[in-house]
Image (cartoon, rainbow, N blue to C red; front, side, top):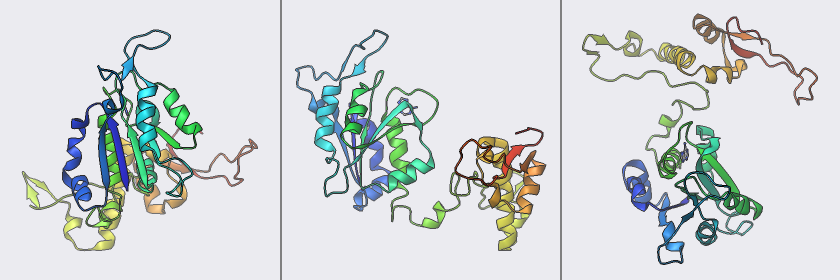
Length: 283
Ligand code: ADE
């Protein structure tokens, strides 16, 4: 996979030389290049921003400078090399970046990440490249405002990079982690020593009884998700929950109820899908 990152602070991305991502680069699994946006400016001051039309605080990044950079870096859409790169624009006003986005991006051949600063990049940039047939993703890493897209780019490259074949030594370790296919947070993990500061490792994990260990882990994942991320429970497919799962959820205050059906509103499915809801909360 190739990733180009464009920023006015290339040094910010130095962390991508380290750890698994750095190793993946050195192993040739990831061709990652960081570019200074100012290399595409044409004035003596290497200007990348200007005041916002319509007034308001702060500065906006100029579309002409970004256009020059992106024209150079984005393989034109519809070419033999795979339909062009995907343009990723980190922004607090984007869709929230999740593990599903990371998985989708890991399937791309080429990403170009455009890191905005100040009040962001002139909106015509995303519009222009969408119009030219590029896939453009405006993504936020969470509901808070950073000073620019660089930290978000680091987050995305790390989340995507570890999904590339050969990057994580044991691919099994990707299977059960939080935000995986099960839709649950990961269970708590322990290592040696078995007793530390009078805190003991749960007995079952020392038992060597794999079925009991799997069950215990799933129970803890369900409880933890109910406690910390109830929004994830509501999104679960109740059809994937067995009687034991339902009993654990009931203890945590959740129940599975018959779905509302399509209500004649034109939904594609005529099946009424069971839903996971907080006990006592009517649909
Ligand atoms: N740029 C500034 N804040 C951001 C956020 N929360 N996510 C992505 N990019 C950003």
